[in-house]
Image (cartoon, rainbow, N blue to C red; front, side, top):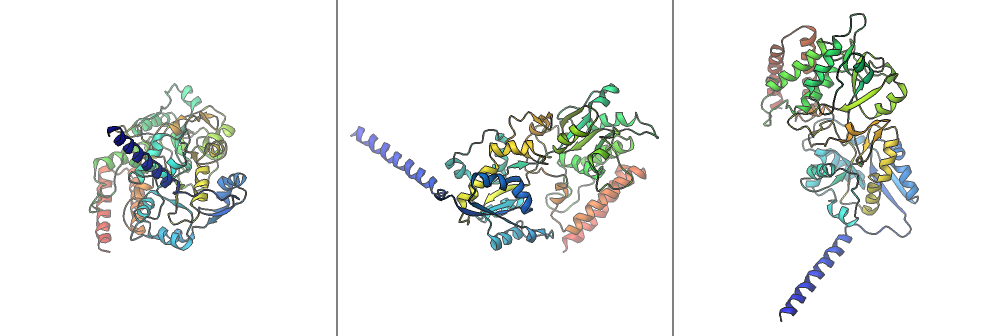
Length: 446
């Protein structure tokens, strides 16, 4: 009797496992025997999608047609009553099989059941994650509240490039990975002291030399808020904001940070202060690795962007602006998955690394070089949910576009008043706090 019971339990368990397996197989149907079909994809531009992904996918599946859906409906940047509402309308109208989402939209659409959960799909299809850092997969899972709803074939990131010859010439220790902003600015200011009025030398510059972008980078690294979590009070009178303005304005006044006389909107790599040896360091994307190797007349080094010492393994400068999710109502889930998995494949990763792209493949483990420079500064840090472009600090403010624009303009004017008018940081930020708090009170009454 005991043996029979054990056998019965074993048989019952086996049947459950088989049922589970058959259930998993039902998530995605098999590809059609003739390999034909159509898949509808959301993307920024049709031509750029085909150049980056579609043309290569067509070699593997020549009989599958890719229809790229334009995103004109989403070009309305006015405030939404509910996050993702405009995208939801777009999906209902166009019914794309692959949906391009950002972090906030992903959460809203997943809650409405619009996105296919990919956890079981990854398991069913035995999706090979080799080469994708586990922390990146954790990031996608974190965005979905514990489930994976989207994958991104690429990510964007920035690094600090430096003129190794200049550092050697002046006997200055070069920058290192995972510095703080304070350490970077202190290093940059040493070069500012070496220049003359006729021939100035700067420590740090950016491609378009916009000091506000540096300020936003600093505040994002320090995880500063503009408005408190209740949306009641501006936060510019805090010690964190005062310190951020202080280190950036000090860097500008000591020539540690390059600040042009006029706003730069377009510039070639050869015209930058860095390539012209007027700046010891420059912030830029992986594209510079390839561009600098062909344009610079000096040895180029590279290190990570500064980090928050409280969390040095994280970079707020990693962003995923190509996150794709499968429409849960799609009739072409199999083809949509084949396209998405190919976009995230090792084959595609090799193509992206060798190409001239601003973005890098998520399969970045094992990449030794990018454009002839070490890849480590682009690959060694992990992303976090509140990261992305520096303007995210402002975009996370739940307010009207008009108020956001006023915040940015006032912040910029405050920085200028500190640098050019020698206004004390505490006084300048107190005035900004008062002005924007009054504007916030009006905003709350709308």
